[in-house]
Image (cartoon, rainbow, N blue to C red; front, side, top):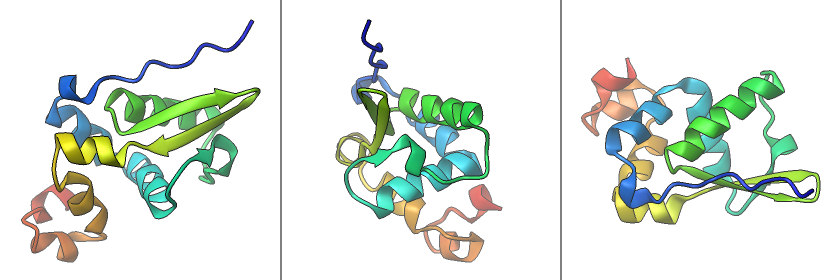
Length: 117
């Protein structure tokens, strides 16, 4: 029996608060930054974070349910990619703004200082 592909929500049904909540957690933000730094897919095993596999799975599920990433399986391997074009169409400038904020000083100019602190 082939593994079941996970459901990916349509972004027109995803609320902004859901996306922001997913991006508010530091580990998930690191994952999104890793995916944004390299266009295309990344193998699950290439997401190198000091967390348990079950924790990584949990974070990826939240990102997927928020419409930020999509995953696909090929045999026994799982690949993850950022849905940057889809997110840009739904929430113009959001990913660019969030990814450009490295610290509170950087986000102050974008009006996001209070959310980062």
